[in-house]
Length: 350
Image 1 (cartoon, rainbow, N blue to C red):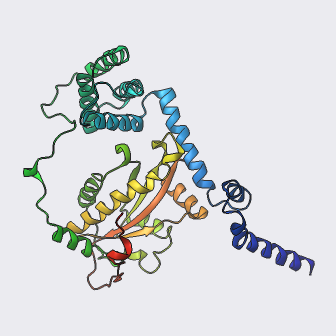
Image 2 (cartoon, one colour):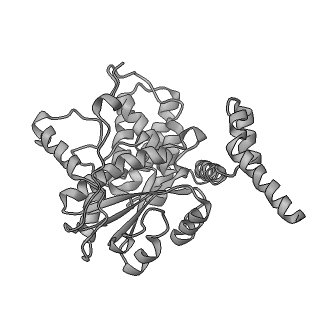
Image 3 (cartoon, rainbow, N blue to C red):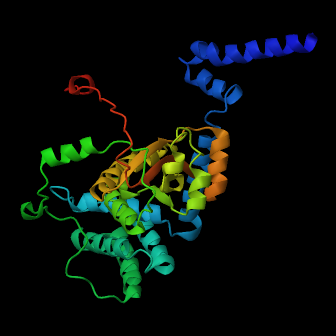
């Protein structure tokens, strides 16, 4: 009898904490923080992942001097300085040193592994030193940079990977009407043919996806593509929402965010923003290749997070963002109509 009473009190207490206490604390940042510290673990995995990513990022800066994410970010910052109108005579003094250090580390450890980006780094930083007025800081870093550049011993291409003017003659001929119809065509498909998906087509779609914009061009995500039937069978049930059609999925993609791309907690949401921009392009590209997809929500549920972490061997700073089921559509299966909100409901000017 006493045990039953204890359980009843315990259940009512937990219910009160979950359903009533938030109304008493949400207006105070301190009390809200205290609430999640004492009564809820909803953000604990995210807290650890963000901190682990920050530490990994700082370790690369301090120990290895070969932080690829820092080099990408700073090269993009330099690009923006080079395209300003008018361009300042001197800029980037507060980060050109760490940029050259990161470039040096990259050349020593990664040269040849990222050929296109290597050319971009080299061309943009070269253009910077050619364009700005020299002072004591720039002179020192310029000498360090060209010593690193000479290490490559490569011939420079006449076409440089630096800011450029868009050419009207080379703009895509796709009309708005065609693009709109492609967006209308793309729907979440849950019934696929029993037919393998060619990796070449998946790669083409991903190649299109990674042209999407990304904050400071860091692209803090990666695509884990599973097309082995045995592996697909294991992972399709990890997210919720695949019940009833999981067996139909031919290729399964887990989009993973890399929080080591950032030096500050302020950027913790960019893995979701940048990956989502790319994922929409990915799904549209699949449609042009005769394939369909179903984006699958990945809720932050601890036991499922652990399953995915162990299955993909994720680092502490990596987070699953979403999943995608892919295949050739089975035209005998239905898709949800899913009427969208009207333009007036979703758009406001000024």
